[in-house]
Length: 195
Image (cartoon, rainbow, N blue to C red; front, side, top):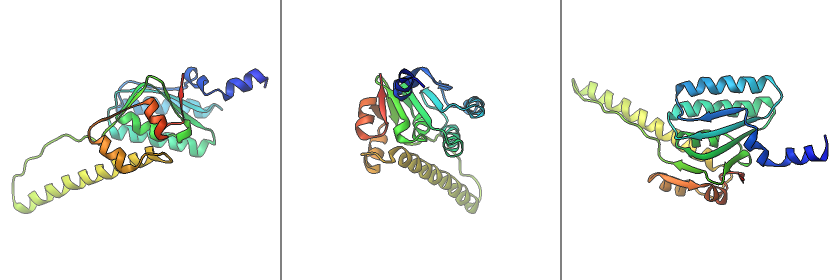
């Protein structure tokens, strides 16, 4: 390898132009399929995984599935995985970003993260015997408690090795925390800002 090739390989800005996996748009069930197909192509070769991520967010559980695949790639391929967030990485996108090792998380200078509590919508009607109604309430409570546990795990993964406490992040997330790339870097949530 020439000195010029070495210098290019060591320059993280090269990641801006070398993504081999793309998520640009909402995160939903079909995003999982597209992501898995792209990762399979990367896995069959000898490249590192370089994800370009721009998203308004979406399905939190679909994001968890994608995040799992990132972790599996890193663990079993013995190759690094990098994430380059561009312009906006909102909501469920932050779950995906958090799956990457902190030094391998990058944002462009114009990027904002949106970090908030997990959202759940729905309603239910109580009707019938009291015992049946109690069972329905217990089932809903179990769902909410599971969602809260998953949210906590996701926040802890994002905070791995950084300067922000869980309590601080949680308080900010309660009111929709929009965080600039510079602020994310100052807290140690990302490895670098790419220019």
